[in-house]
Length: 230
Image (cartoon, rainbow, N blue to C red; front, side, top):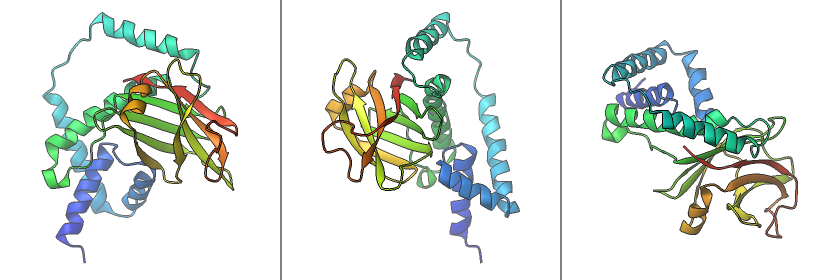
């Protein structure tokens, strides 16, 4: 028998799905349920209808020309540094889009049902040349949290993936730790490392179990990208 609590959980879950706040694994699980549960599809449709109304109250704003210039400067400045397969448009726009969706959740959901809102100010996509590994990283300075979302790929058997930060102008990398197998990982950075995120480079290397013991990558660097402000 479906309880009231179950229904409330589904209402909140449908809202997170409509707002694209679920991670890849949770989204796939929810979509499996959508194929089998008409009532759940109806909840998503209700959320979609309610969210469309929000846009009616927002007056269109023409951005100043300087915005276009700034975007072009970022694009062409990073094009030479970004590895093959990295979507610069996604790095520029993804975090801002997440912030807008997060604000919509805060306006609609009652306090008890509001999900944890993560609004990064810096982001980077890390992609292997063949896109066998695809990771998105976002950093929120206010909380000091670096969120790693693995969208594709993983470590080889008997190996691990280790995350590195090379601060702008630095000659040596700093390990941010071995990445777990989970699709989403939050790493709380100390202030010194947080300050080095902007303009720095994040990289992922292939390492033995437990990670590098030398203070530098010992295996192949699988993906790397320059962190930009969004």
